[in-house]
Image (cartoon, rainbow, N blue to C red; front, side, top):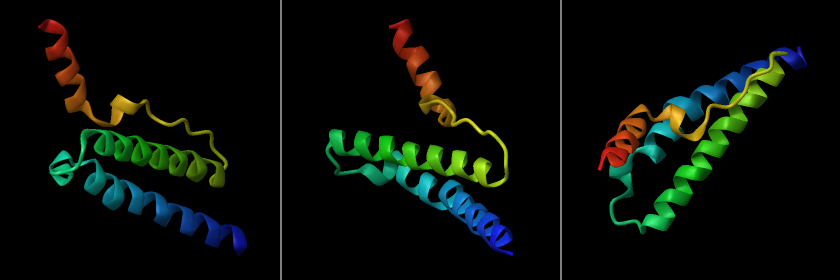
Length: 87
């Protein structure tokens, strides 16, 4: 019973992190008026939380899940980097 509850709680936290926390805090429109250093720090921390939750959710299910690289969860950032390299 305890394992079932733990899996359910972990799944709930993982979904909330992916569907609520991450999109709200990673949306750059929500960073208006923030110093650039603060905005980058928040993005770094959100990615870290998201990665840890993903890894722990895999451990709870008995699987090995590796976190995505920082830029992998923002495909638009990859295009921005490619455009910057062309200049």
